[in-house]
Length: 520
Image 1 (tube, rainbow, N blue to C red):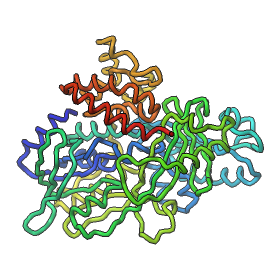
Image 2 (cartoon, helix red, strand yellow):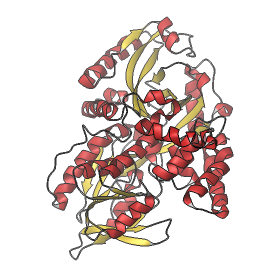
Image 3 (tube, rainbow, N blue to C red):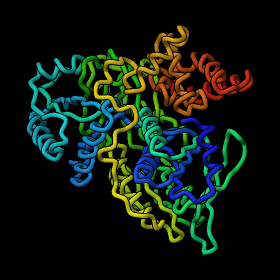
Image 4 (cartoon, one colour):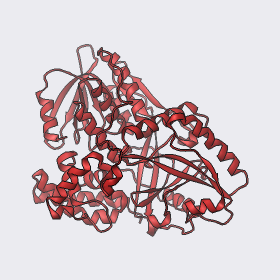
């Protein structure tokens, strides 16, 4: 996956692509994998970096959605549970089972949640991750050693999936390239091409690195830009009515001492009606999330002070050691691309089902949905896009398609497990240069070799690409990420042929960005 090669393939092609995809998040890359695996020609353009927006800012869960079950949205839960199982089967190096405990403090909670989670198990069917069961108080404390015990009666344990969202995105990108797709990041789409009848016939793209623009013809254009979908729709029709109701969710990252052990906490009913999770992840604990309606969409949404206070307050209710602002290693926010009308009461009530829209001029927009169902969203999108473009019908093959890096026993690679089958090559890279075998920072798990690998094999172009998404360092410890930024810039400059001025600009830019991840 070399950016120069991708750009060259774009320039060499004289025929229109079957599909041009705008957006390199979960949905866009899912569409690219699906379409390329069917044999269609695919070109995808991401304005900044793969997963720069919402898709790298999730709660890191591949789940059916317990709260959607309570809302009565059975079809969404069933779809998500089935897709959860398919994803674990196709990417076992990135998706694994995680037990969740619902602590019970009132007499009615055990039977109420116990029955509900048995229904959750039943809906999963053969795609289940494990059976739920009631826990005594002692068993609950054994699984959650730091849980608040005053008034604790017991708990219910159930099973869901966990993953690394940005790492999965990179592996989806490499899967798409392996199937023949062309992907270019740092290449925003600035306009849409039309034929003589006014039908959309391609995209106009600006290459942020080269500084030039190119026109890419395509039989159909897919808008998969999540919260930014309305902006692309208005390139087609400036008067298009907005369909996105963005909602912000934040997460706080804490030291592992706040939740040791191998189980997560799920609180089914917070003050704002959302579910609260405390989840062990990469030797940290992620606590979240909120559901705050916002008016504007941003690539770098900033957690609000009252959101941070809300999450800390709820975490303190359930943890013996109450976390405070000084305990937060990093905080990040993401925007949900919810679809709804202006008269919806609140974003928490809006459906998480996906929406597929085709404009009169032929722009295909896919939005809404959730990470877990990205594959099904992509299948639906390609089915419709192929008909619209007059392509030869081909059945969807992605239910059985292994994702790049597939390895059934990746845990043997330790901290490099998320690379799956690529891990031995990365280990060899580190072994060939002792300096690359060193950790980036004492408080971060990433090796210097991972920076080099990201530049050579995963199309990382900036310090932000490396520290926020290829290694997750920014999310694990924002201060440590700021401290190591000059070292990462130097490694990248050597790989990409950049000068010292570029390094200085990169460090300054990343430092300014990373300060938004600190609780001050």
